[in-house]
Length: 265
Figure 1 (tube, rainbow, N blue to C red):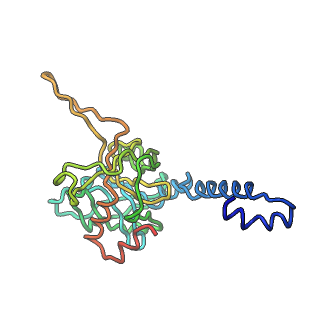
Figure 2: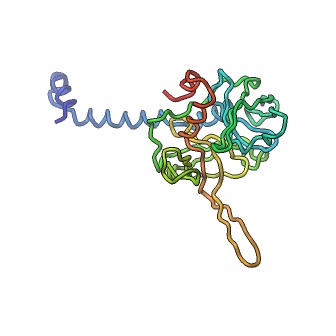
Figure 3: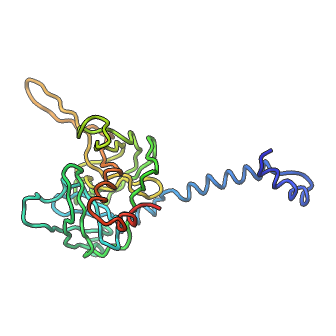
């Protein structure tokens, strides 16, 4: 008999004349599982994130996510932005429902960008975001097999505000940057799920509603022959910018207090 059973047994005998601790233990176990499902990301949560935190970047048709609505901070992939050599430092983004009459469009400014990390920090305060998605704090595991939700705008405006479901395939796929397996490596988050052109910069969110990565690319394979060179996109092998890289980038570009506010509890 477990400790729980011993603590409950006197009460059970007093009221029912015999112990029902196995039934009670089973009930508690069932309630814990049920509570876990309730805490998981539900369809309504996906719709809320889509309409309040997911952004569409006009022009390239890429994606992004609000990480601090009070400050107006949003993240996207750096390769989605206008050429850094161009004098213009702002462009249009929009967010909200698909209904054009209900969407909010605004000029955004690039606060920071890094080609090596393939990350950019945007100021979208003129869009007046009301909610944000917190970045999963370091120390919280990202494990292979975990379910993920992928937000994006595949093929740009044509399929704006799309959500697909996948899984973490490899939580730490090492990249070609830097020496292999050094502490300075930039590593990827490999995931399964539907991604295409326009998903770049879109949020990869775990079942608890926390950001664990941003969509960066879809794996490709290049076939060479004497006649032609062909590129084949490999389905269900998505490459994401890892949570650790996101936190490193943010720590280099925003204040410590702002970073802590953008992280999960």
